[in-house]
Length: 117
Image 1 (cartoon, rainbow, N blue to C red):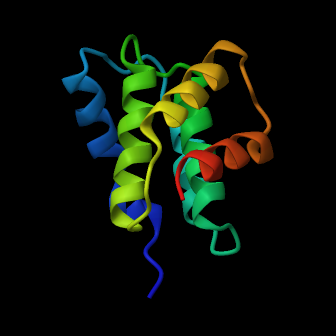
Image 2 (cartoon, rainbow, N blue to C red):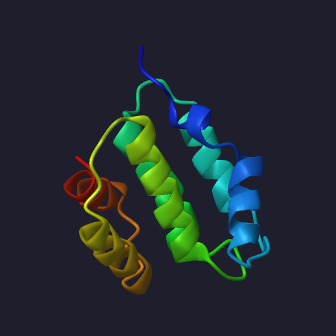
């Protein structure tokens, strides 16, 4: 049985997690788009994670804690899928995606697969 990312985290939980990092929601359109993508059966789990990570890191929907929230989501993903996360590499990729405004889902997906195995 393949678990879906939407079973790991909901929009409400994402907002609660970010609030714990001191942020508030500024705009939820990109988050809504990412959660719509999570429902597409043809997309794989890393691809779905990439959409959510891009929504958080590139579109900056929160006033604060975007990178911390994205990192938390990635670690929760790794935990639920029984994957090992290279935390240093994951942090490097999170910062790089955010700093360089990386929009391409394939690039983000590759980075996530590289850090979470």
